[in-house]
Length: 165
Image 1: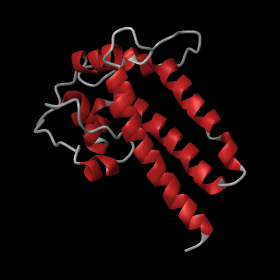
Image 2: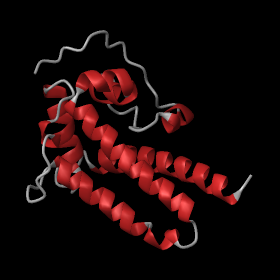
Image 3: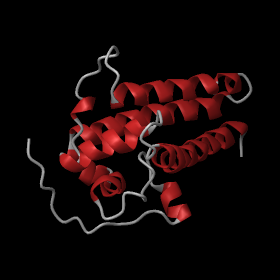
Image 4: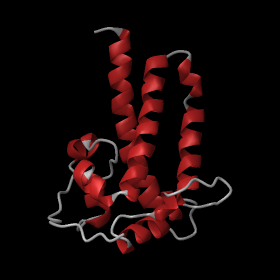
């Protein structure tokens, strides 16, 4: 296998593992503590999604001067990008895959919370995370690979979407 292919595959695996670990241990683990920086995820984002059946209007427009769920999420993603800059010189394909995965994560996460019908069709595992019986499962957003690997992909029996615009 070529170095390119190895870096490509490892970048995808690393990004999915990082997404799973970050969501489980930081966004939920630390996020459940009310005075934590990460509390925005559990106390704001999850509460809004349950109340609005997956819809989070904080994603509708990007106003960088407004400190909300979306701008905090973007700040965290930017820090992840900066932390990986030193790897660019030695592992450019790996780092490129990490960056591409971050962009795909943001695109899918934002779209899922602006269009719950799309989310139920294309990101059922994330839909189940917010509206299923166990929000302490289904940690992945982009692809459910690590949820399957770690045994945390819990399928819900949500039959209909009770979403109103």
